[in-house]
Length: 382
Image 1: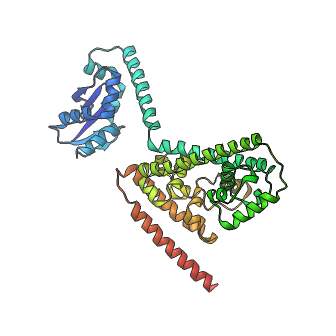
Image 2: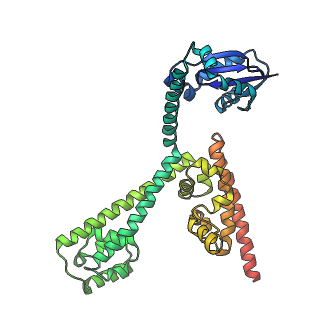
């Protein structure tokens, strides 16, 4: 014998195999109250306990929420919304709604469904936007846009300052070090040992900078001009520090949103994978082969249109395991990481808090060790 549990906008029904209603627990005739019921679920648990207290039959349900609650209650059930009893109640909604709420007109019922649908849609959007992985995506966007801005502005500041001290451009290659020095003291004639040590330079480069500053062919700019350059440098440094703080925030957020994924690869790499996939759930649905080349859009396009070699990795090249490996091993290591990432993401989404990150990471380390041993052996043999 089978019993059929249906959740409808007007309540929860228990039906027999012919669609005859055996039990009915009506919902309040208020769309806000129904939305709360679906979110909090306590009303649903009590209703199911009441309906099924004397039922000893195979339970078939038409809604995933009912199945989840029954699973929590330790009651087995089957999700099969296409069964005939469910089709019967869907074909006569007004008849069953009237048994729950009393006589109701078609126009009135459809208006209620419309208002309930809008309310549930808003609630779903709100829940979606508040999820941790969506915060990860927006934070990654901020970091990416900041990097673009920093990389565009830094050369401009260097070129601007080269009017005053052109030799410094060749002495200091790193943008951060160059701009930090300008922020401390833009006037080349005032650069001394103390300022350069504060900027973080070693003795060898300090001597070169001081000598170059004294022999410079650069123009003598006014204090107003030099302070304008300094303000630009300070703005750049402020954005740089904001980007660094955001990266630390992303790492913390990832360890909360996707602890297993964050154990398998660096949290920033995992965050970029989520951002490209669109969500953690979407990432968890992808096969390892797709995860391996996420972010390699241009390379895939060239492969499809120009016949170039297919890409071996996308964002995963940013993982230290891939980036620091011999070129011949990068594809193999990318496949290994993608496989473990796929498992980690699925556990983060569907594992109900289960943590296997350390085990996955250990498996990666063991495989990497074998790859390197085989590579060294082949190199010696060659």
